[in-house]
Structures are given as structure tokens and as C-alpha cells.
Image (tube, rainbow, N blue to C red; front, side, top):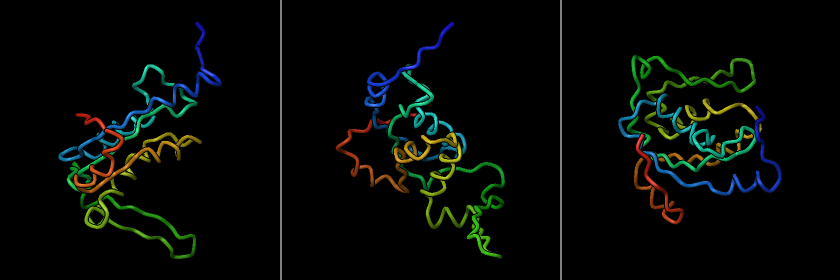
Length: 149
């Protein structure tokens, strides 16, 4: 059995039909929400999915400050990054990150579930995360459709 792979203008036509979706994160578990959003960004559920093309949708996540974490993650999970200098390890707990920038918690979870390839940066640009629901008016021109997860 042969697999059809679109090329040229056919491939461009697949990437044009991206829709805008709104996901309400209130009461959602972080990991499960992130996997569903990553799947939308990749375009895995579309019949025109092609692994080498960015054919996913734009996703706007609202109410990121109201996500849930299961187990003891709120106390034990740490975000770490290193400056590159000796002793330059920076750590911040997820509790502190949720108070400072809850959008970054959701963004990091979703980006961690995207494939690590050349399309990752392009797919990441299609993700917009907001702490509250008032920022939804910012995307009224795109006519985003609510999506129940």
C-alpha cells in the first residue's frame, strides 16, 4: 500500500485552512489539557494531516490561572533552568510560578508535548495563553470557536 504525500501547491493548500479555537482551562488537569492542545496544534485530528507540514489550528487558552494539578505536584514540581555559569541553576516551584505567571505553566506543558523538530517553533506561535478570560476580546477579529475538551 502506498502513502500519498502532498507536495508543492497541494501542500500549501493544506496549511491555509487553519481555524481559531478557544479552550477554557478552568477546572482542567494540566497534563491532559496540554496533550489535547498539542494535538490541535499539530493537526493530528484532521484528515489532511501530513507529518512534515504545519497543518494545525490556532489555539487560544483562557483561564490558565484556574487549572488543576493532581497529586503532590503543587508542592513538589520544580521548573529548572541554568544560566551556563557555575552555580547558575535557577529553580522555581510550580506554586510560585502559578502566582507569578500562570500562562507560562500551561505554555511549558504544551511545548513539552510538541515534537522536537523544525516545525516546533512555528506551531508554538499558534498558541496563545491568557491567565483570565478578559483577553478573549483581543482575538474577536479571528472569530475563534469555543472547543469543549
